[in-house]
Image 1: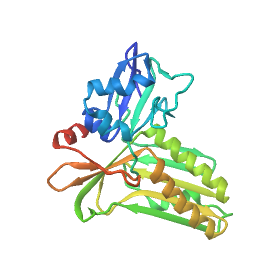
Image 2: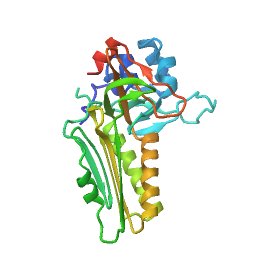
Image 3: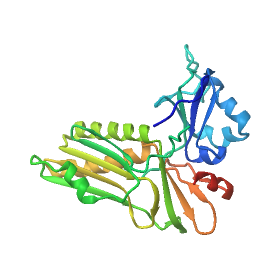
Length: 98
Length: 172
């Protein structure tokens, strides 16, 4: 269902409030990108997104939830995740099914 | 690039042993969901239907719009279903969520559970709904009369986020 992003890029999906803030549901961003740089990269493109959306959201890479480096718990992981070409990243705001 | 945040109009489904989960753009069918969990070993089927309410804290709601991360939502729904089948010894669990525009008063989710005895089915049905609301990657936007919508959050203490008119147009 998901077509692959252009060479040297990953796909990022913006759901719910993330989509409203960016005014798009999907785009391709340059890869590789360390996960720790993701929020700063998005903030650069969409000023205010971190405070308004990302700080309340979860992140998945290829359908798996990932811990954002430098999170509130202050833990640092030994091996940092790097988003690779062709990966599918998603911004997951608080869910509201039912 | 195709847009994976916009589900295919025909929806999607997963079946694994006695578990069935689905997302659909069509109307929900109670009889179909009951039939999916029907079993000669079951003495009870419990069915839950969630319907769309016409107000949020007294403010009139015109309609609701649901969107999903299809692939991940189905996977999470299946995780929930399998865990509850194991925990309560269920004979079947079926869960379907509607996407797109849902007019007020219509079903947005159905959960059907069958078990040898009714107590397990009641409990598993309630737990399935609570788990679904807490975890499944589906989002609801309430559209108010004459203004933009609000993305709702089920999580306690998280306010829905206002969508401006311009933003709302980008979501269509």
